[in-house]
Length: 413
Image 1 (spheres, one colour):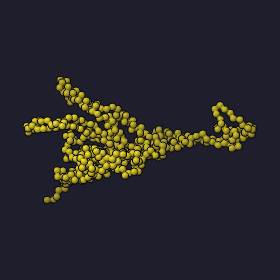
Image 2 (cartoon, helix red, strand yellow; image 1 turned 180 degrees about the horizontal axis):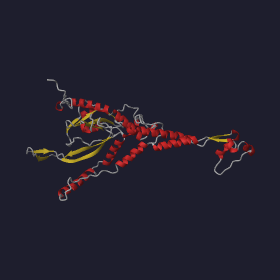
Image 3 (cartoon, helix red, strand yellow; image 1 turned 180 degrees about the vertical axis):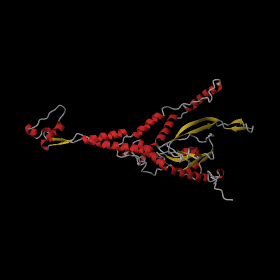
Image 4 (cartoon, one colour; image 1 turned 90 degrees about the vertical axis):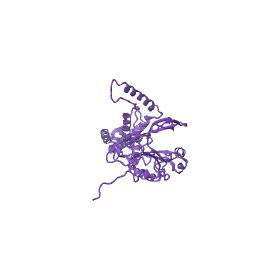
């Protein structure tokens, strides 16, 4: 019997139930290394685009932000900043409000009508004044969508339990058990920086196998979150604006680094195993923590699909809007640079007869409005052609014509 061409494809190299912590550490190290390679261009382009948006140039910019997209010349008309700022104001004006509506608008269904009102009030009381600035979170995610091309936010569930357990009846076993009682709980909407987010290889959002969120913890915070033994084995370093390694001195001047050393921790949500892993890059050969599905949501993920720009079904990868229009922005910058150069050439300047320095030469140095200067030997001065015969102005007509043409082309671009 011929062999089948069907290949049994597994999502993981080994059965997840038989993996040791070291096996998981190697698995996530390989996954994160591959993810870093995939997003390398996206991160570099994103930083360059942010620098273009901020119009960083000259001594004010670092080599990371000015690596690309600078256009021609030092003078720019930063229309990119104008466009993004306008879109930000148009797309986000105020914090969204909770809306709860009945699925069927039955006028006789008073129970559903009252229930919808109650749910709305409960959600309003929980979502809006929860202590989390949802407005800033959504604005930051939207800005990331318009600049590097991906804006991300997530929900963080926080819960504290009472010290004393209570006895409750287990409905399944019909036995009395001691259970922890919730003291306080909250779900905060948290912004995720676009460089602190990774995901597994996928062509579409539905195929994504895992998502990773990066955070930076001090040794004190790591000890409190995990334990002292694991915290001692982590690698602590100064944090940079992009989260890159601090050995890139040419990219980050000392004044842009944090003076507090922190460890890089990744919180990885694995959809296949329904588990959350805490893993540290360059740390010990172990997983810091593992938790079974902490939220118990239908979709498992702790956040919605990111706001992603220009993603196709070839590969789930953002492509910034700026990349689609960079040639147009560069053309406008080139025109503006030429306009600035030619504008400096449009000035009132000329030459005059050196022998008439006492008269013509003094005219612009000493003359003021409604003033006249005396001329020695007027007859001889008039014989030489007077003022027109002793003075020649720089012809600006051609320069002004070119300047007007450039301005017209720029305005029509």
